[in-house]
Length: 116
Image (cartoon, rainbow, N blue to C red; front, side, top):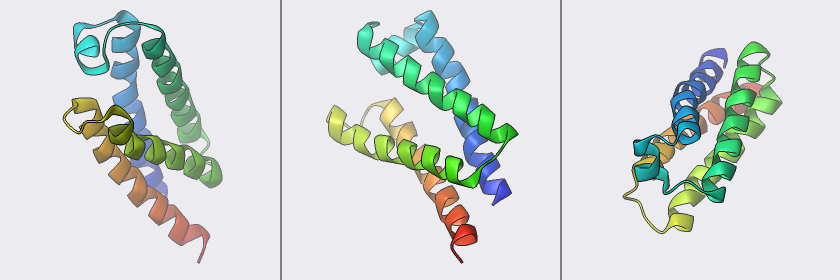
């Protein structure tokens, strides 16, 4: 369980540090992937920064129920993203689906340990 949790939280941290920096600094690739700078992107940055902070905190103190909550919310929004955006061709959506797969495996591992 510890390895799967570390993998998912570490993946969040490794992905979200550059993504948050790119959104905050208005990097050209951020505009290409997330659209033009504006209120919606600012809100997205706040959500991503919150996930990043929670992931760092849970790496320090991995509470299984909190990890499950964070990862389940991420899986839900990542799987809903292609429906909401109306496309599968965006690189953010494609990477989100891959990350959702990793998080689903982690949730299954945690669930097997907690509910046996």
